[in-house]
View 1 (cartoon, rainbow, N blue to C red):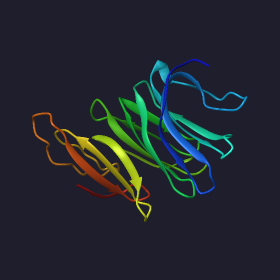
View 2 (cartoon, one colour):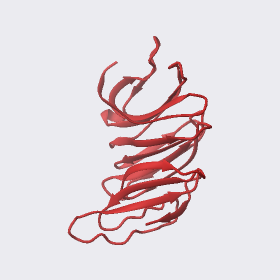
View 3 (cartoon, rainbow, N blue to C red):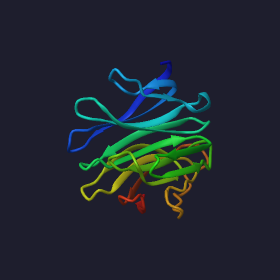
View 4 (cartoon, rainbow, N blue to C red):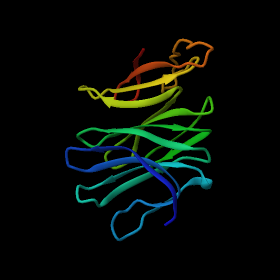
Length: 193
């Protein structure tokens, strides 16, 4: 296989010991570490994102590739004990997710936006959304809520649902402000600061 670029951005493990990785690649990448090949090919030569799950012995369980003609990334993932995967990433233009068990697509409001995904332990899409700003980290709290940190310039709608929550204008100098965003396990807005 010919991989022009490949990077793992996030790693997690469930209570059963299954490993989950999220990353990005261009070209064609073999995501099966065993003797078989499971090849992913990026869309129209652009950078695509993927999330894969492996057993504790390193056997590929499933992989989901997503993207479109723009640049798509997985920035970070969090995994629950039961194997639910929360992923945050960035995309340019349009991004398309199709897990076979659900699908979604989003169009960026600016040059790049963020997306959120919740996948079940079998890689099926459970919930999704998109929002503005640049996300730098995600974590799960003790109640299973998702907490994100990041930055934005000017103003940004950071509610990933069809609703809106605009952060205040960060000023015209181009300097960014930080944000904290809390979402429930179904990716519904709880609060932002």
